[in-house]
Length: 212
Length: 212
DNA sequence: CGAAGATACGGAGGCTCCCTCCGCTTAACA
DNA sequence: TGTTAAGCGGAGGGAGCCTCCGTATCTTCG
Image 1 (cartoon, each protein chain N blue to C red):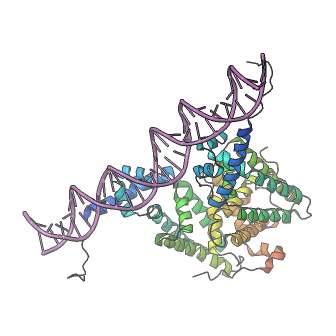
Image 2 (tube, chains in turn blue, cyan, yellow, purple):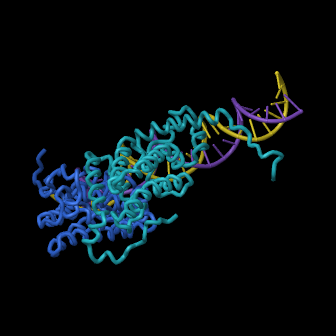
Image 3 (cartoon, rainbow over the protein chains, first blue to last red):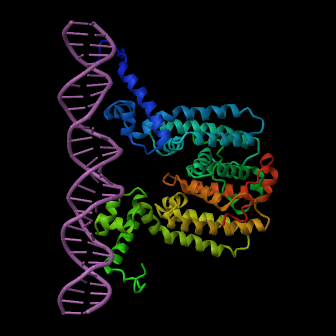
């Protein structure tokens, strides 16, 4: 029942150490081998038993997210900085370009993002939230300034970004994606919406204030 | 060395039959379970041994491609028809929208496309070629009519399309993708290129005449 | 038709990976 | 230093991949 003190016992030193080792090993293995890499390989590299790995990170996603959490945060912070740029459209473009750079250096990063998009683990939700907010703040500013159409949500944009990067193990993908993003951002500008017809009828949703 | 007659022996009846059975089973299994589905399950459903499956389709891709080959052709033919539409930009848009519809009904189709994009098997190359030509012909026409920027290749466009669809097992993906494609097509229009600055300096490649 | 080959069949078996479970070890605390 | 909860690790059962080869079946030709 209720213990004498609600003090929690200090976590065991070996547990802490092992967790760290697994994370490090996982980072190495995932960066090299992508998201499908063997978890047993990770355990071996970390010098721990497979059971230990699973205790710390019950699912593959948990491990993944833990590994790439910091990366997600960096992207999020970049968005912070860009909020003060004067041209909102260019700021958004800049962010997207940096994100490409990011994905280019960390194999596995993209898979982590994809997981964030699909899974509903706590950590995944966290990542998703951060990124949505990051992109959303940039988007909002551009919309508010009347420079961008308002019917695209941050989620949409994020999806487009993920998607374009998805074929990232192909030769020349990076420049291709940069070109595509350019086109895309151009398409987002308000004036091009003016040029289009029919479709203007379904404004989907305001998007300026997003789901939460 | 040269045989008496270069007549090839008639293929065995059971072999033909089994091949067909496997294909049918694979179609069912892949459509339901996606690209990761168990090949042993396919064999079982087809009522053949696993060895037989592997003899006919040595790799997973081979099987995949065989299953979705017809689908790819349909997409390609659709592009044919659309070539006679009067507004080239709308024709392209229309094609993309149909392609979305397509992917929506066949789970696994997308994975097949992705494979076509990445693998270099003969069949993959074939698919890629068809699709590239399909999209390329539409693109070309719009560019020739002076309605679209010329620095996006069919491959780029295809990549963007794949990508946007990639998260297709999420709720609401379809409408999201349709919106994104709209934005994208808008971005492709020439006049929006006029509005952009810097980047105009690197025209990548003419794209009007593509790689082959 | 029947024999002889060529061709195809099928599934056992060896491998890798996944994940769970539980007896043993070890660190924290008194 | 002893007690005890927390943590460790790897055996083991399951699933899927793919190969290999003895056996069965089809085609061809006399």
